[in-house]
Image (cartoon, rainbow, N blue to C red):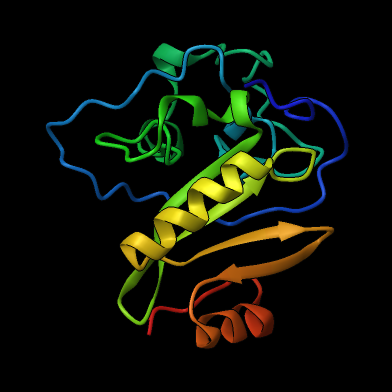
Length: 175
């Protein structure tokens, strides 16, 4: 399923992400292949003193891959994995960011000791199939998530979690 807005439209938000990957160090990540959405300004970071942000993609991205891949810096390039690519990812194959239009930042925030996922849309509304998958898994795994619609942040989880998201947006504090 190719998301119709995955490469089009104006970015409507930004996300600051902890880039620490908590996966098994021996597990291998999924290869990014032709996906480079994390380099296109949807995830706020800095690469070799270049700020990556909305309207300012990584200057080393060709739009399809990294032009300095073999010489890319450790931080953030080698240690950041989106939720789809991270080793032992629980996300299905069809949820590759450039296919579904969503970058998942998994479990880098927490609420009351539970990991919180962040769904970052890449130019259009979050696809119903993606949202339905996350809602089902959030209930099953007791794992809340945040997402944005029309520049407003929402939370899916217990009412207390939703209240925190309403108050703090995507800047959740570990409690």
